[in-house]
Length: 628
Image (tube, one colour):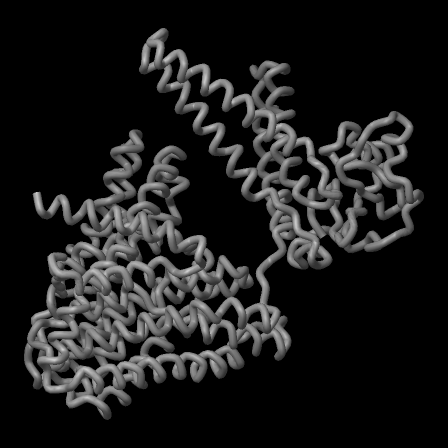
């Protein structure tokens, strides 16, 4: 009963204080850590202890697996050089630098000091990417931070286990039996190799087995339940052969996420995404709360150690300073050597400055500190140092990174640019679907026409995010009216339910379908904002794919300043304006009732049009359906 009440109290505190933190702009982990610290000094609050086994086998596998599911394997491959430079090179560089500082300030050997360095080295995936997305960093930078924060956990924890083995300490729960101080370099290197390559092999094997099982699972609840098993299966299997459970979990998660569109149904993917988001939310925040609740005992243990509390705090601040300094010392030279040629020196320096300050530590650092064996010399001091580094980076970097990015003018992609590319991609996919539909000789022409109209509207909804004067677009009007209808429909269904007029199972199915439609409409509403801060230009990589775009002039003089000719003649209202780059004819977009820009192409064969909306410089080829 006490355990159940404790879990309920922890979950309730996480939900409450995370919600209160959001409007204040304070990271919820910091709030919950503070709440835990305050509660630890209140008489009567039970003292909760996170054992190393709970951290290793209960917390790390699901957190790492959730992060892997949210990471793109394609992005990792494309940006593998900078990601490995940060997730492997920077982690080892930081661990070594911190080891030098710690071995100088603390009465511990270098192997244990290196273990401390491995603990504080990896930035947190959730903290870094949450800040990056909130302040709108460039997508390439955000992807690199995501990849770094995922893979550096594996580097740090494998290094930690190797360092503990070299120090003659049992790596608690790691499967390592290296307990001899006389371990030579070759033994350490062999253990490291087994941990890395064995972990990757086990992760791949788990991916294969789970993939086979998933092909025979059709029920979303069963598939989601299988997903909950995967991280623990991969972790335990790897640790049984003394390999890295962390690498096994990350490998399995990356591969399963990459193959999810093939292995899982749409319902299963949605269910898995929602459930893992909830699990991550609870675990990430609960760890900080539980660490805070242990603060009194941590301080008591530090006081009982051979170091004073004041000296321990000062050493923790010194390690924090070293951690903050070592990242830019690595990032600036590394980016200068491996930066892509299209970036100017000024762009590279500004991006490096922001990246070097995006090193917030989080739950993995705290969890790794708690995995230190109980017989570790100065264990309470090392845990306190890890806590100081985590809180220090979250406060110093988390609160100042947005201002630094704004000051250096490092911004993310314009949502309108994303809409341009999205419209091109969805249009190409829709075209492939319609061609497959038309090849069906038994298809009803009326049904085909209806599907074609729905598919065209789906593409037009994306185009409507561009241009315009702020007036309501057709898709926005549809969304508003349909949401109003759904509200009235749901009210009637609830009346019927409460009056017991219809079978409840039938009503539940109707309500579930209505919820799915409303969720899709609400999702479109959240992402339909249109910005006007900077001129909108298309991505160069798309423009280079079409000969018509290369041949046609980027700009001609429009044949009228009044708007769409044919809309004016017919008394119609257009949504957005387009202009033919061959003759300057002005017409309306496909979201407009007349679709006169497309009609001009069909009448004349002129292949390229451009946007005539203020601040937009993109062009479109009707022939190749290419953006430029």
